[in-house]
Image 1 (cartoon, chains in turn green, cyan):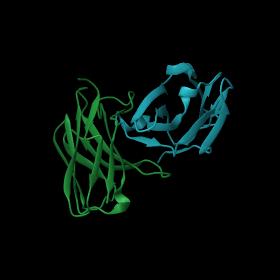
Image 2 (cartoon, chains in turn green, brown):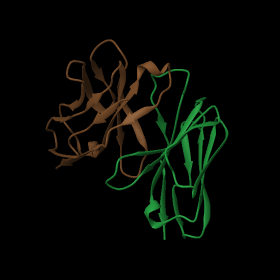
Image 3 (cartoon, one colour):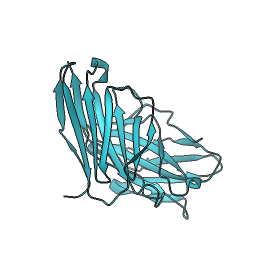
Image 4 (cartoon, helix red, strand yellow):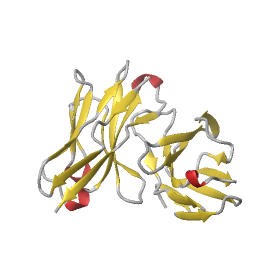
Length: 115
Length: 116
């Protein structure tokens, strides 16, 4: 399988639940990203990982906890979320520090609904 | 710091008519420029990119964009749109001086709606 794969595609969770989103890439990329896309709002960069190290956290609430065990996998652990956290969560990857010319490859996203 | 402005949040166009989606950027250094397309309930897909050389860049699905350094613009065009072009389009910029760090700055997106 090639490209960036996100699972699950859809997730409904209660505010007291704990769940995880998974992202996997088979492109040999070294950088991975989590974005939040809410209706009628710009794309929000949440976290950036380069070579498994977190290089950016854009003031994301602690109820979102990222994990990057290796350059191919990225997780977003969720707990005690709020209804306003309902959104499309997009994962992306890129070559990172090797080259600046390829842009990002995105997954299809996880549609999260918090009830 | 770099920024991207997409002035038009929504653009309705009749089928088979031409379309232009506007993108302006701000940066103190040379940049790479990208257009992405997002179909409903999908991730973003690379449409085309400008790195260097010819200022007219051709992408997938019949789209093209022209880099204009003096006007700091990178407008996206298609001479004849199809129903299947209905989607959201994002312009993005990457700072060339970051020695390969590919952090992209995205615009707020333009929703293109094709009217039959």
